[in-house]
Length: 240
Ligand code: DX5
Ligand code: ZN
Image 1 (tube, helix red, strand yellow):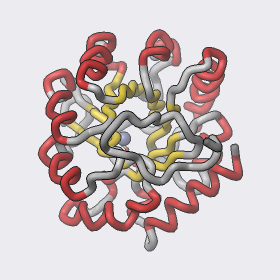
Image 2 (image 1 turned 90 degrees about the vertical axis):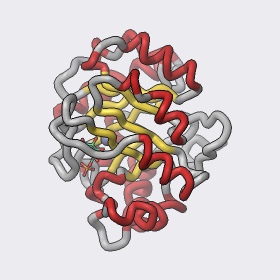
Image 3 (image 1 turned 90 degrees about the horizontal axis):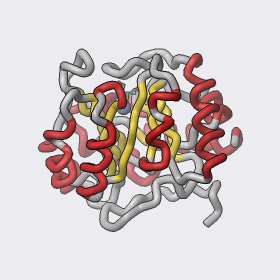
């Protein structure tokens, strides 16, 4: 497969190699109209590589969003999309099987909460793709020991909790370091950035080595969300 050619569709059934192609765009439904989520997803579906679902517990982050029941409903509506569930939670261990059962393909837990080895083992056992996230102020050394056990590394480019925040460019040296280490070890780990990604900041992150881009506000606040996804992908493709 041409590594630059994005696969626009992710199979819900079966194992999907989430590091197989460059320039994956992950629309974040956090910025969509929660009263019309299915319609919002419909608008971007043909262009969506991963659908990013932000789960916030009001403890790990100062905001409260959605959980497994909503994922289950969305799964019924969208059987073919890859659901990338970003768990901004203190106790994801208690909910991982619910997310899997509801239709998540991959879950991402934060390294800040600890117990990472056990959480990785639990996700593997459940057959979930394994994501590990780090906030902007976490050093690369905090995630480095887990690199060969995960499918996706999420380096936050905002402090999580809310959509529409400004991209923190200071995270880019960490992205560069992660890219170098992933390549040096020949790992198939998706390198995701999340927060403040738009037409201007995406190329900055792509240049640093990110290959998977979460975007909420840039996509769902635009007049034509599908076109915006295309444009974000185009900007990645011309950068890498
Ligand atoms: C932030 C969330 C993000 C958020 C990104 O806490 O993890 O996924 O939806 O939104 P934008 O793209 O608007 O910064
Ligand atoms: Zn997120």
